[in-house]
Length: 554
Image 1 (cartoon, helix red, strand yellow):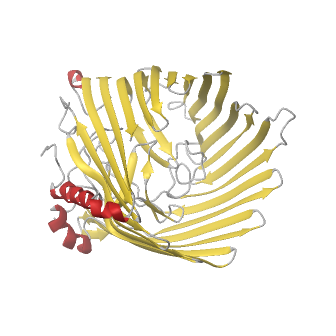
Image 2: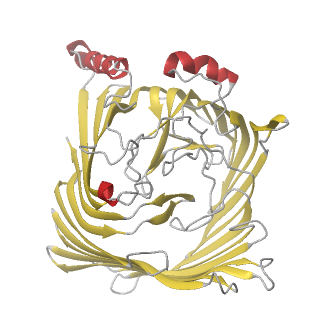
Image 3: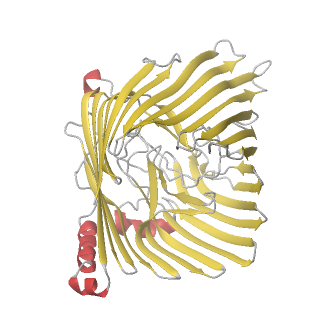
């Protein structure tokens, strides 16, 4: 059922009452009150909407959508009150999946003193290095998941503790798919302790209990709260419970920092089979070890990982389980990938690997210029699939002048090989890449910035019927007119056989009335496909049209 207001009206009204009390004259006399408001508006006019689920071409033409976020923050003394209202509006929705929506996405009350931080409501959090739990924003790929409930942190000399309990909450209409996705509402309990009482050695331990959709504990709570306490199987599966335990250690001495994390998970899940319900969840193990060191002008990073069945996603939701073209799962953990942040990581669940990076900073020149050379190499087994391996090496330089000009140039090669596929094996991917970032001051009021990434991709070498070579890349050229204006030209390109359009030109115009606000207009086309950030990936549709984005802070 489509409705513009999806959330219970009591929630925003109750929170508005709290804000009113917090801003009352009596409280204002007790402590200074500051109020912050951030208004973000995005309007898309799709000349042609990229949605394979829309068969009729007329349904994909001239689609307009509007998304608005209103952030309110009120601070007084040790208290912070926050509310974010998200709205999505489709004047003429192309299908039932595109629903108008209005709901509070973030609302919280936080009390903070020297030792305690107490929060009721929504909070983002990461346990360890993201191996045990990672509910946070991935702005680059449009994911944002938080925990709506109760949170407590305690800090004192040599000791820290964190406790939490709540339901997982996601952005229901994001900027990527623009379709309404319900909250998973998986129930999470967490506890972590950490101590540095041993001087340079810091030790920590944690446990995360995720009571999933069909858990008896969750079912007892969710029917009165959300009305979704039904025990019906979803696609023949019962999502019951995931329990994660882990330990961390960090040792720092003489410019060297060594950190390690180990985790173990049990995953209780059943599948309906002809023989009845059968347990299908598999236990998982994760090990991560990293070391950084500074030795004069040299800096080194060495890290390794071993993950076995290390994947924790949200439960399937009955409203979208059978829908096509809608996000089904949201990641609850983001273990370190050991990859470049933009790399397309197909498998970070059952994989082992090692990564080494070296940086050398040269002494500043007589003119004050600074030069850094760097080299990086990573090797992974069972990547991108079991029995395969991946090698990625790259290196480059970073040059900064005394006037602030900057040049970053890097190039490298990536090889993904399946030695047991076919008679002589197959090279899944052979890729040379070139990356260039350059910024220069042309005049007192004119800055020039350029960004270019280019990839020579060869896929399935050794399998003649599947082999393909093509180019892919992105080029941006910006002229900045400080302090307010910038103009950017864009050209993205992709020449593989599956692409109807090989070039994606566009232009940005941006105005910044102050350092915290902006108005940005984009006209043209942008390339979709698989995009990743820190090992978390999702499929982006192509965009063709006009996009207006504004953020105003007061």
